[in-house]
Each structure stands twice: as C-alpha cells, then as structure tokens.
Image (cartoon, rainbow, N blue to C red):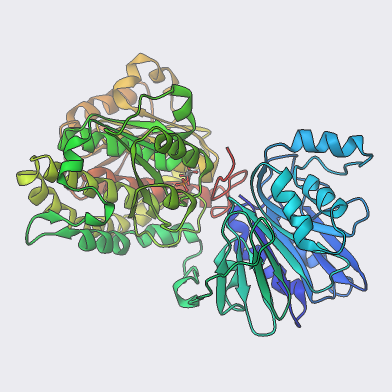
Length: 608
Ligand code: F6R
C-alpha cells in the first residue's frame, strides 16, 4: 500500500527520489519522506501530506547528496503524521529505513526492545526494523539484514541506509515486491518497476527471503543464510510501462475511454469465432477437469468482489455450475467446505491484495483447484494459483477501478463459455454470446457519446448527500459497482441494491433529496425495473434511468435517461456500468474532488 524508492549514483538523489515518490503515489499518499546521506549523516525530511506539497518545502541544499531512500505511505500502524511518516530512524539516527507491508510480531519485538532501553519515537511497526537493524549492525549489512529476516514475522519490503556506508542501499524482501534497478554508474531499488523507468536499463526482481546490497557500481543479492545467489537481470522496456494521461485531465477518464480497445483485444485473443470455441487452454483445465468441478467459489474484494457477483450469475446460469461470490476477507471466517472438486477463482486487478491472497492460500491448503483472474500475472496471487487468466486491462493508475472491472466481467464471461463448452452446454451459448461479445467495444463507444448529457445529470445531482443505485439480475451487480464508484470519488454516500429489495426496507430512504439511478435495460427484468422507478417517482424521488436508447417508457418514468445500446442481457452489465463510471467522474469533478487519488484509499491493499 506504500511505495519505496532508493537511489545511489553520481547524480543528486533528491529529484530522483521525489520523482519516484510521485510515480508511486497511486499506492498510497497520506505522507511521504526522504533520507539522504550528507557529510557523514543521514538527513531525513518527511511529513504528512502529498509529495507535491511537501517536496517544495525541502531544501535542496540541506538535502544535497547522491545516495538516499524515499517513501510514500498509506497509514496502517499509526495515523498519518510527521513522526509516523517514513523513513523511520533508530535512536542514534545512524539508520534510516522505509518499509512496505506489515510486521506481524511488532508488539512483542517492540516490548523486547523497550525492555532493553529503546525509546520509540513513532507508532509505526517500521521503527522496530530500524532499531533492530542498528543494534545488530557491526559493519556487515548482510548479517544485520539476516537478523530482520529471522526475527520479524509478516511480509515486508525494506530499503535501508546506514551512515557508515555512504553510498550503499540495503534491500530486504519477504512477501512485498521489491526490485533492484541497474543503471549506468548508478543503481536503484523500488517497490514497483514504474519508479525505475528513465534511469534503470535492467532490473532484478528480488525473491522472498533475499537481501540485496546495492552501490553505484554493483548489486549483489544474498539468500537468508547470507550466501550470494545468481539472479536474472531482465531488460527494462520503458515503452511497455510508461503510463501518461494522454491528454485526458485524469487517469480515471483515460481509463474509462480505454475500455473498448482493451475489451476488443481480450475478446479477440480468446474467442475463436470460426469454430465457436473459447481459447483458454493455458489455464490447465481440460474438459474432464471442468466436468469434475462441483462448485465454484469466486473470491475478491471491493470492485473485484462485484465482478465475482457477476461471475456467479453467469457461471451458474450458463455453465450450470453451482457458484457463489464471496468477499475474500470473509472466506476463512466461513470455514468453507473445500475439496479437489472445488474451483476457487481469485479475482484481482493488482494480484497483490492481501485479503485475496490469504483466501487463495486457504483454498490451496485444502486441495482446491485455483485460478486467478488477474491484471498482473507476475504477482503475489499469480504465483500462488494453478492458472492465470490475464484480464489484459493494461496498467490501471486511477485509484477507482474502471477498465479492470469491465475486463474482469468479460474474462469471467469467457471462462463461463469455456466451462459451458466443456460441460456440454456450449453449442448454442458459445456461438450466440461469443458473437454478441464482439459488439461490446462498439456499444461502449456509443455510451461515451452521451458524455455531455451525463455531465448535465451530474450538475443536477452533485450537491446530493445520498444516492441509491438499483438493478436486477446480473445488473444488481452494476448497481453495487455504480454506488461504489460514486462514493469512492465523489464522497456522496451511495447504496447499491438489487431492486427487489426496495420494498423490504430501503424505499424508506426515497425522498426528493436522494437521487436514484435505476438500471432498466432491455431484458427479463426491464418491466420490473420500470415498476421500481414508478414507485420512486410516486414518492417524489429523482430518477436517473440507464435504459435502452429506443425505450419509449423510460423517459415517462425517469427524470433523466442515460441511453445505452441494446445488447444481450448477459452482456449488458459490461456496457451498463460505463455511464455510471462517467456519472461518478462528472459528479466528483463538479464537487472538486481529487479524482485519481481519493481520500483514504490506496490502489493496492497489501494489508489485511
Ligand atoms: C474500487 C477498487 C477496490 C479494489 C479492491 C480489490 O474502485 O479499486 O475496491 O477493487 O481493493 O483490489 P484488487 O482488484 O487489486 O484485488
């Protein structure tokens, strides 16, 4: 949830660290800091706030130096504040350290250190590492780092500086990603390859339980026993990684607009329309394996969990496999009955979500087959599952997920068609839906044409404090996701419901101050949705319908209609969510919110 950057070379470290922190800010951004070696000491500057506000207050002269570490934080242990920001230092301020992840036995270690007389200056678990490293350093950084690996439980990535090693960075990894970037006469460490672009030409991806010692001329990696290990140096192709806004004012808007292209590529890569066949052989599930599955558990969090809801509708209805969508963080609490006839599908954009990883570990330990529906194949979850279906959304930078969601839905539908095919239900379904899927990119492009109208609706609702989102069938999922997008980036309290639930309670909320978004596109649920809209209007509620562009009734029961083209009802949720993404975006814009980095949120939630 945090970001690490470290630099050692001949250039001034400060601008490189600040640039790296900027790049990593999508991971968390409630405080930031740097430490730079200068004149025999480590100079630390850090505070609560965003790097864009903090960096101009840091003196270039005080922080002149060519070796340093930087960090952007999303608070877990201790509130965002100056004292809790990273780098953390030991009592003598001879060690500075930045940390991603969680130290699980921090209380015991902290009490042990306090008993030895250490006085802690922060509320963070990170400070424990700094004291431990300092107390075990006798000139050998590898020995001190090995103590951290021995004594500390949990998962962590660390970058460390010691004032007696002016041009050296020490990196330690267990669980959380960490890379070494190799440049010319300079080297770096970072928690994400993005932060290395522009300076490094090769990267070394550290494995768990490894220690790296990095100087301007060398990078040597050791295992937890202190033995040097062979590492692969991969070329860094910046063109594949650099993500700009490409003229859009926000990443979120750019990513919404990328959806047609992304989905086109995913569908054409996986659908063989000539033979009505879905190409998913790389998942390692042949027809027999699909036939032997007795239940599917779809697990994910947040937006990914809503994608799981959709997956459960289609897998059960179209492929005939009993399926449930579960929140990954509740999975172990259910003591789920799992065996080798259970397929557990982990859905995750980042592939690094700790809650989802823990649920996957449980499934693996109980003998389930596992698949990851992921945007990052080479990730924590990607390495834990039996097979990965890459959703191919491209890097998503906006904290509120958009293109990853529609790609997850599309991937889950492809998976469903493959399962239907293997289980003898595919004849009609694969051809019909496969062909219909080819129309998704164009349908989404058509929705984009309503951007101006969506802007007008946003103007109407942007002062609301509460909203409702309703849908039925697989579009109940769209209602949940629409509400989540609205609350995440506009901070309007929004609830999503399957519309049948209204009369059982939520209708009490309807009033002229509470706009309701109702998804009522063509399909089996359309008439009942029209009924829901009538009931809301009868109670003076403002209704915004997402309806087919040729629906004559919708304008009679709604104050605004966001038109969408008619597609197969099983595919509709992939299209219907797009006007809701745009509505959330336009509303947040009018409320002056920080769209790409909403308050309190982090792009990747690597703690439970
Ligand atoms: C919402 C959002 C989050 C994530 C959730 C899971 O816009 O992005 O709800 O969906 O934190 O993240 P991943 O998909 O990375 O596992």
